[in-house]
Length: 98
Image: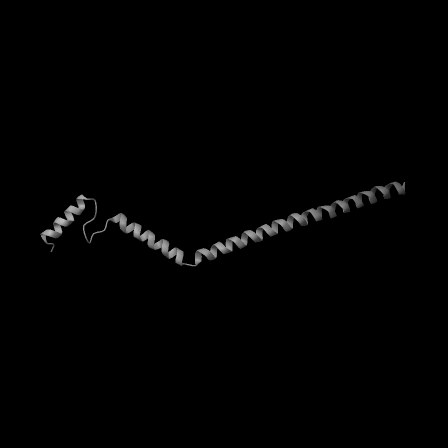
């Protein structure tokens, strides 16, 4: 049971906008819960590991895109040379047979 002085102190603190001793406002509990979760997230190593995998994946994608671009230019050159050779052989053979 609360004594008269405890009740008076609770009333005076409520007037000042603060919770009475032993009472915690709902928003304060929620904020402490959010802070506790944030601390746990920072202690947990799953976040940095996922970030490291994302960076590695981005680097691999960049290398693959670069390789395909370079290889594509070389392949284009080979196909152009083959097409030119076939065209010249086709036109040369037709005129020589007439």
